[in-house]
Length: 138
Image (tube, rainbow, N blue to C red; front, side, top):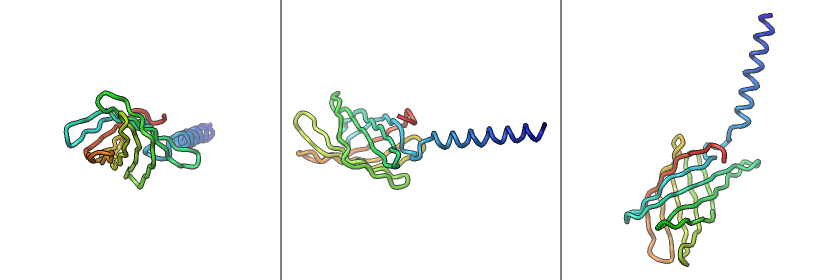
């Protein structure tokens, strides 16, 4: 009786561990992240990333931010993950002005922090940004 109980408990523990492993995201970057960006010139706004992982392990991101209370949906040109390092390049257009933003950062726990540089048709701008994971699986 004790042997059957022990075997049953061991099987339940193994199946639970397997289910947890199979259901958890493979990349620690997967999830929905919300936060803020701040420019060196005192401008700022909201920032959001939804990062997903395909069956082939490739990560993709949908990104948006606010600028002067305007929602801007950016096109992800590239997303590079190297260990805990994060680099994303976004193309965007605001009031007929197009530009590209390169954000680089580091993941620590559920937070990614870093710096950015904008390359609009006007003068480039720099600043900092920080987002926190609010949902593990989008």
